[in-house]
Image 1 (tube, helix red, strand yellow):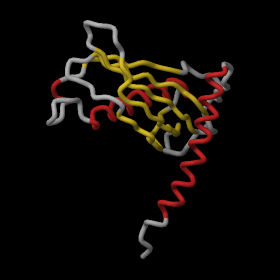
Image 2 (spheres, rainbow, N blue to C red):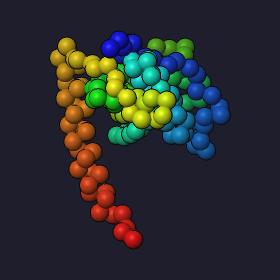
Image 3 (cartoon, rainbow, N blue to C red):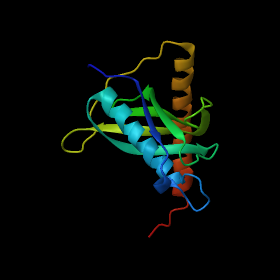
Image 4 (tube, rainbow, N blue to C red):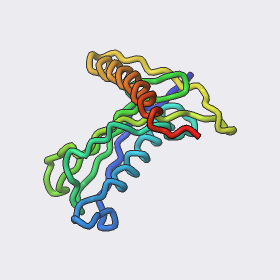
Length: 160
């Protein structure tokens, strides 16, 4: 099965419409950018329409100011049968300087679907470098933790 590029970077300027009451870019705007980059990465890799199954571990490390040059880097770090785990880093800097600062990091899981909305197989990604192997192992550990969290959260859902 053919696959496309494993990573993608979106670049743009943070606009005044992205700002919250405190004068910083609001989390919703950042999450929209993350979803766009995850979709572009997953669709590019799988050559299929993809849907977001999970976005988690979102850490807002530093604020983004209006007028900042924003880079959203999305990279495949694990592939299942129909899913792709994508590591996302959001970095921002003053466009007049080159001091990129990590502002947000998270993992998004995208699922490739067919024309009926049913999950469909994706090309497999096999890590080679030590860093890629580490990222894949980390994605698997996080997947197992999410299962435990899901079971724990189920206890909080009221039964009819």
